[in-house]
Image (tube, rainbow, N blue to C red; front, side, top):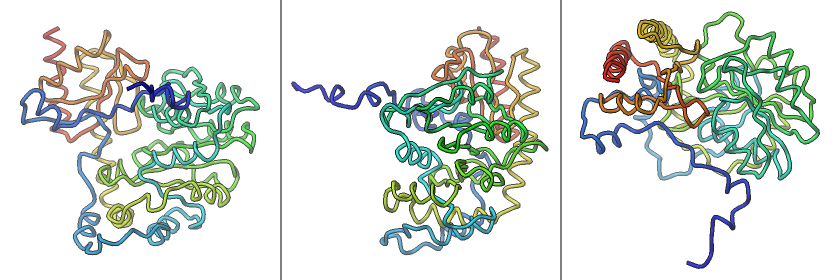
Length: 367
């Protein structure tokens, strides 16, 4: 082969490294021959999907037909639930897809996109893929320094990504901080408020981004059905924004980017308040269980309001991660986020959390 196809790619793509998801159960089975495995790596809902969603999927019979490219039924349900108009909505193959649509629609070579240090890995990925310049602003106690992010805006800034709560740290900012930040950002800059873990938060001063759309026309709120709704395998999320921005995103969006089973299940899940409340309650008690267990092991942790906790191993975390794998427990190392001493553990069921804590105690004792 005489042609270097990496060199032919745009300079942004050349800088990218493929996103590394949490290790699948099947991969660990192949590697170590284990059969009793607990996966707490990818912030999935341990209760699974809504029974309403599963019931709806059983009645699908027309999979030979293309999906409704406009997502009419799901958009109508979302509009009613959120108190918005259907022309403010963009559906995506997971909320990651919506993040990519925003980047492709509003970033060009030479433009800048701002995000926080220790923020979701997809933000720099979609920025570089557009050959734009990523600007990572140093964090404040592993969370967003919103004041510093506002100060980082230049004439080249086109998009700002903020996550509330933040992944992978679980940190959050309150309504006052968000409003003060938004008031400082020029309308020409698109602010993306990633609320993937919105439904898990029980803090009284936690802001609802959708409530701010009328005041801030440059705001885009993204959410997902992958987390509390338990539909990660179907890949469906959405963005809410002013109709002009939604129009642009729907121009960039690929035809049929969301499949029929995903839309049917999402619409059913949206109405299952009991499942949402049970999932939130299970998560709240699980956060306490894991936090107390980590304290007993004298491990520092980042306080979280999401469905995971990042904790400091006090040393290189990879040997601890590998030790947990040998015990049949999959968590997430955070070296790729610039946090080489940290692991992130998803909140599971009470039994799964106890399994993780027992395995961690053993691994730490073994050195």
